[in-house]
Length: 248
Ligand code: SF4
Image 1 (spheres, helix red, strand yellow):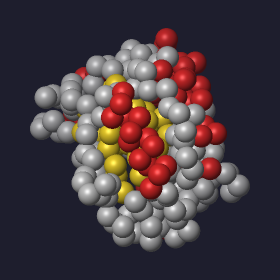
Image 2 (cartoon, rainbow, N blue to C red):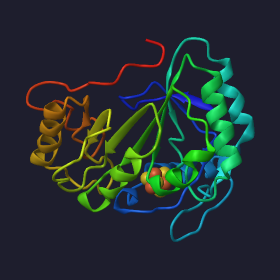
Image 3 (spheres, rainbow, N blue to C red):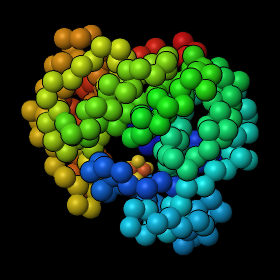
Image 4 (spheres, rainbow, N blue to C red):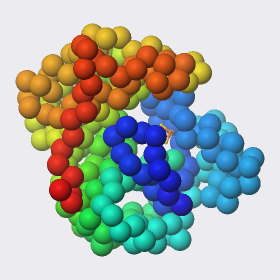
């Protein structure tokens, strides 16, 4: 139900929902879609529902997993938890009652810090007033290219304790970012088969704006054939800044 994560900015992934549909260019090489197909073939119980063959795929149909809601109650030591690495919690087919159940688990386990990342902030905004927002929930939006920068304006209106941007896979320059109300920015290049190369000036432009605005900046990787192919140093150093965790 949950597993240790290789993602540099989190410790563990928790997937009370699996499955999704591609929504923008950042989804073109969605690792979750590819992995779900493999997990279905291996017989993994959570990945047996197929999604739309055009926007989703085998094993990647949106599915809620009520039993997975119990998992965080069994973790004693504080953890940083990436919620739904295999889905988008705010996909239209995730019922609001189930989202509320996920939020309740988060509120009930304040020793952990939960990171929810979505490409659907307009649905978040629509539901925001009907949800209780726990202090240990961080909400982020993906901003992979300038075309989807309007996700930031929607995010800013959401009452999350920390609002963050995940500019990954960065596939174009973002230009000017309005960072008011934003508490963290992650940047990463794409990796894997068909990875679209990231340019250094796209990254430094974002980093410089974060430094100027005093927003923690995390550079995850340059990407390439594998996630570690080109390392993660930027201007001769690592950038691992993060907001303070719930339990610290
Ligand atoms: S929103 Fe995320 S999980 Fe859904 S298809 Fe796009 S990249 Fe994959």
